[in-house]
Image (cartoon, rainbow, N blue to C red; front, top):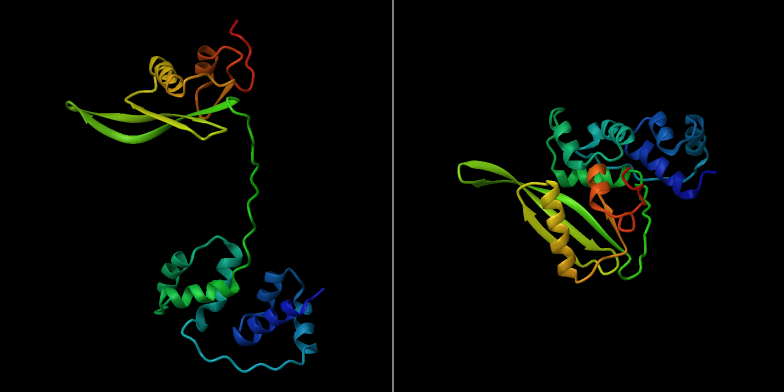
Length: 209
């Protein structure tokens, strides 16, 4: 069903923005004959739009946004410069806002935990530091309590097992206790098996044979 709002947008894109009917039909997911019939049956009148510096580039902009919905106005501006567009980014952004389809919202799963139930561990990379005459990689060990979001961060020059265990000890001493389980991001599987007794890891792991 073509709503009054869709009819208004179709008329604007075809009559004011001078886009091909086929392009408008693809944007609304309908057959091009539906757009033609909507325009023919609509008796509303509109004032002709004044010429704009962006008019010659509108079909290209709509085509690019249809193909790449996440394309930014800044990136489009670089492409249009190569095609002779001399307008400002503000002019381009106003038009992109008019014709860009609404972006779908991402869905996230919120996980609730009890106090002391879970901690999360991860490594981060922070470039290199000169030590003596050598450049050494700098890593950050982080442990965050899932319920309170309390955070412990420590820095080191390697991610070896000895360092990994030492960082755990410091973090747990800092928090003053041990969570029921620890969840690891991007930590090698064999390290988790060696490091954790079965009650400390999530998901449960088989004991080494």
